[in-house]
Image (cartoon, rainbow, N blue to C red; front, side, top):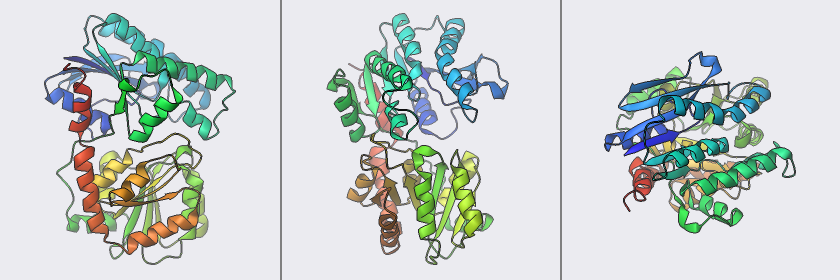
Length: 401
């Protein structure tokens, strides 16, 4: 088949390890012809162009800066994306007939591109990989209100995107329920679970390398290390994370490490500089390969989400933790089903992200349990539910009919 994949995640090579690259490689390895359309931000200095490598065609579209820029440029850039993507598609790949139009959120502004492609390829199936539920998530964390012009504009786009999609693949059962509950016009038959999934990595670190990596970053080798890695922004509820670290700063039975970047990173750094805790380490953003190696050297993964969320998020960092046979502590809003899932399947503990005492209790429970055995349960759960084959087969089932 000919497949076009639209994404706002810059993809220059599919040999990297993430939920999108892994899925594209799977389609390629199964003999399908894949064309990626992704942004090339202005700051990269790379003009719009098509490159064929790794067995796929990659159309990079020059856009304004969409990340790590001011609000004005980011907002204008998101609005212009539809026009820029359509122009590039018409110029470089308009003669290709596609059988599958695959696309992911964010953002919902790709709706116009999907509509154009469906008109050009009436035989194609359109499949949405729903990774966030916008604009409701923005309302939840106070970015704008439900009566604002922003909400009304983006909500209209969201409804249209669902209508243009033949199928909607959600990250979890709670996501499916939310979409159907709040979008009565969406037929239940078109919404299903197509979870974040990965290709398993067989090259995991041994214990000797684990000690070397801990030494490199100044982490103790004689006590369990709890790691939080990834984005440090408003959705992650960083103020609560800081309160949890502060409440546990005098512990001597474990160590906490936070690695990543984001708009709220300064809150953690300011707390660290003021308190200089002996049981915590704050690291700057690391390249993906270095980050993966660091995470492998730790014992327990931490997941935080802002308590105000009414939508059931499902952070993909869970997959890295489970792949490295690490149990997890999930501090989330009550609508997220990740924590209860971890508890039900024996690979983690859950608390709501508004109770410092409950988080500390989760740490205590983890330290008094068999961390290694819980990690093995998590790995088995990953193999059964979150391998790339699961998502690939879910999508392909609709093309075999």
